[in-house]
Length: 165
Image 1 (cartoon, rainbow, N blue to C red):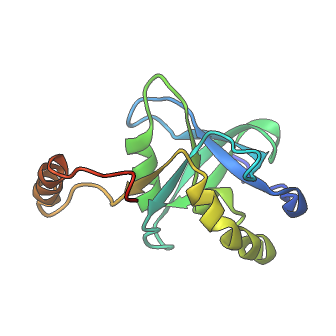
Image 2: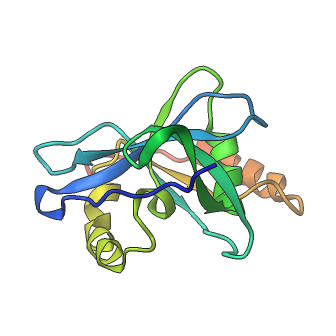
Image 3: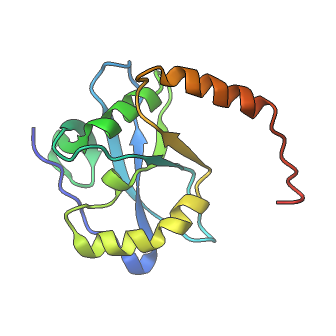
């Protein structure tokens, strides 16, 4: 499979890349599309931002970027991601609906230092203008499910006074 090639963003126009996580079964190959969108306070596309720990750069797996920019003449191209992100995508993927996400490891060309610098400067807007922020802590491990149950129980007792916020 060909390797995915990023096309440059138009920084002056305020472009970002958004990933669409295509539906599929839990253990099916992960397929996504990538497209550029203008992000500004006047133009806010619908997406969620993902916050997560990258994990080891030495432990990587491929996802499939299907037809679109960066995929020339082939049905899909491979894009290497860390195992922790790969696992997160498996858990976030739905069986019948696509999910639009901004994920720094994928939506920013990590080999392009200038783009990385520009996109990092835009991250406050990228996160604050998202419809929501998803936090991926990793797969269950060492009884972490107990901690999540406790946090869920505590969360049931929390109320927010939005007028004071």
